[in-house]
Image (cartoon, rainbow, N blue to C red; front, side, top):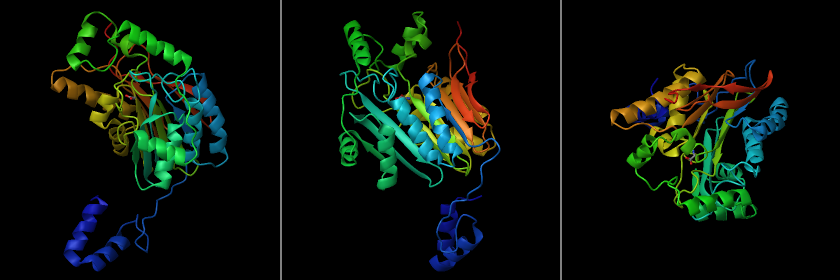
Length: 365
Ligand code: GLY
């Protein structure tokens, strides 16, 4: 089916604006009688509502259990994913998200987050945000209270403060001590090296999985509510010890997160640079639109990234993990490399479960 813009452009050119608009409105199911777009609502299915998170630890489980109530009482996917993410952002033990996240190379915690609401086809994000522990909630305000999608750095901070968010030091002792150790060791686990330098590290016999294990942690929370509406959030402190100002995939719509109400939602964790280049979350959702299951679509995205790298003679890196759900209540996850399958926490009407996905390219060892 031609895209609305293509068809609208065609009608405008061929018949003039008035006639074109009339024909467009009367022939396209998504446009109401006044020319206003109305969202096609379909009820949920037997297997929805559904909420998942890429975190399978205790906090992830607690977050899912807490917000299941919202979904069971007819609440929105949007409210559920925000509340769940806030719980995870609050966890001081989690060094990949929110309060307690690992800092940049100067010891400053800079957070990235995005949110997307399928029901209204709207999105918001913040990047390199300092001193605010719930970047996902600031992203929601960007989405709901501005006509922009993304705010970064000082602008994002000022925006958050204007809405009453309090500044606080997000660097916990645990994260500070790790950062100091990294600095003392003059570690090569930062992002200054070129790709061939990273490859050499692998050749020296160090397990790449071990090298990258903690440095790209992120959380995705995706949900479909009882109305069949989808929403998602991706929130992170990003690459640990990053160059100040480095922004990963998490706040970039289409890369770290994508939601399409007619299809479902997808999110990414792991090496953001690869995810940005591949627009992975958008790709996964489009694969699902073509009829692929969430599991198969996540694997397709990893295959696509590997092929791109192989095509230019580079070995691909191990970082990515993708998660996806569809509006029929199916879910999936897959990771690029590793020795253990990726896990997600799932809650639907059957209760809470931990789902193990697949490793697209298992480690050689
Ligand atoms: N996926 C998180 C990051 O690369 O920043």
